[in-house]
Image (cartoon, rainbow, N blue to C red; front, side):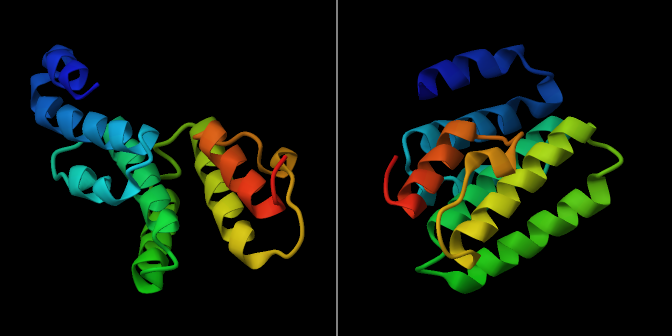
Length: 142
């Protein structure tokens, strides 16, 4: 998968080809559930707006997965994520904004709300399969 990312990064706008490799690599780590490797690949300065949205979402997931080991980093990432959404809400589509907000709400509620949660309360959402798995873990299975 990493070879695929490098091969096809050449098809991206040359200004963002290195960023495409890094963000693509972060996504591979996400899908392989190697969340601890995500942040090393999202900390890029020259990102396109779309790449920046992806990086913010992946960083939130990585921090969420590590929240019990480093609560301070998780809280900082949540704060950064909320600020990012607030300052960029006019630049994002309403659908993308809603999906990112719902993803954040779901993660927040997993830790904050007692009892079972329903995926229906968080639609639409980015990284749906991942979010469903988080809910299943919270709810004790299917």
